[in-house]
Image (cartoon, rainbow, N blue to C red; front, side, top):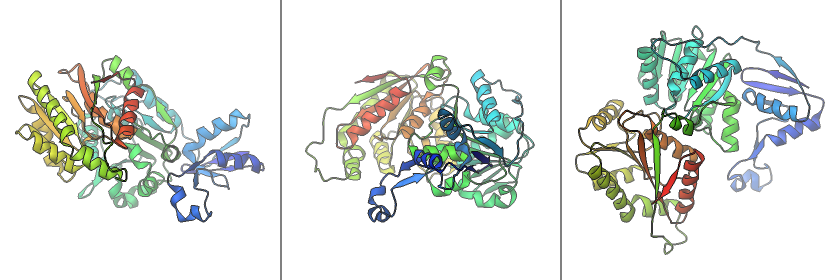
Length: 456
């Protein structure tokens, strides 16, 4: 058996068709909701997505997984590197910064493998790890992809102002500065195709879990044929089979060196006190035919009892804490606005996606610098990429199920700051149809990260 390896796609060549078809089956997974599609109903499709074709073609990032499976049956294929080899450089230092041991190890592992999904918990210095890889591969043409311009601009400022890295460009919406090291939102990728598509040797993807599902974003990270070096960064790699294998195929295996609980123990993150409020009522009398969205609107967005509990929590924090910084996350704009109105007393800032970068920074600055207590309400724009170390209390008002959304949101509050050895987290054990199971899932996600959970 030969495996011909290229930067994007590889192919298995073998006379053992039985073994090849076994691999095809092993790397085939059921597509959620497939049973409702016309193709499945007319038996024209088995409802699965395969990550190895019947001709043996697969995304190169899955090579390590496939080799592990083959070694388990004592099959050692001949590896042919069609795109050639390149020795990994040593880890370069950045003036003014000292890597933690785990950061340096992550950078070295990534360079040795040439590719991988770097699992770096929120607060572990992901942007410094990215900068370390950039500095170590300096001289090569690079692309760093983002899904949000706020993350892009923050990273641009860090690389250019703090790390003093030269020849860095950016591309988003109306903004464009050319550089061999190009930071670009996926929405604006067409603007750099002429300059970087065929020439970029390095591809990096920030918050890469957000690229794992959409066709456009997957196409972006499966491009750049000359890029031998391919890295993704996330605190939460997707656990579901299809997005997980899509991401690994494009970028490589997961590389992890430190956990959130270890960072808390080492006092690099604030210790979370997670408190789940065990709500006393249920919606057993609700119409059984209500959809999830109808349940969500009635028992979360517009629920007077639940929203008043949030108000009581905020008032209690303000009363008993001299200088608190309270973050409240909601899923919908309507819920955020309802809470803003309920809490509206001049101490509340509400951020939404329609706000420009200048308005966002102004609101966040006011939130940080307030002499007394202050409260910030936001939707998904505050879930990732916002660095506010001063947060002392976090209220997860959303009631969602997703592990990625739960852990990303929690990460907003865990960043260490001299004013807070611990951070208080509030969530709800909702009792309604759908919402009850979602609350149980969030509790499991918190406990899986190694955090203590208290029931109030």
